[in-house]
Length: 100
Image 1: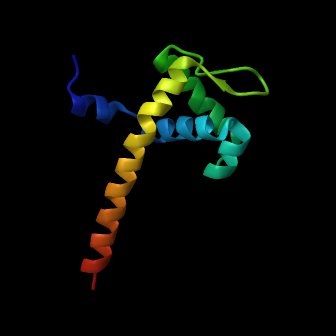
Image 2: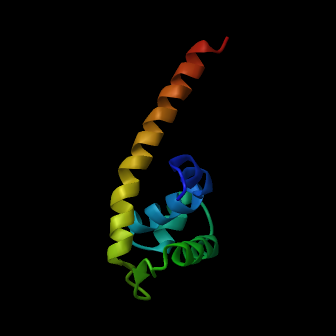
């Protein structure tokens, strides 16, 4: 069994953020616009995540309907990323105050 540090070190935060934005935006096109990246890059990322999690994550061709597993993953990731973002904002603010 892996410890929590090993799990986090193996996590691809870029892929997980991409997944979360696709989930929030309801599809690849809007997610690509929001992230400022090309749609094929998002498709490749989702393909890797599908293999990793053993789930399609989204169903349908036009309407990107999340699977139950995708909803569960997004529900878990969203607050975790908000906490990480808050921590980084605090650290960035402290760094800006201590810079000459």
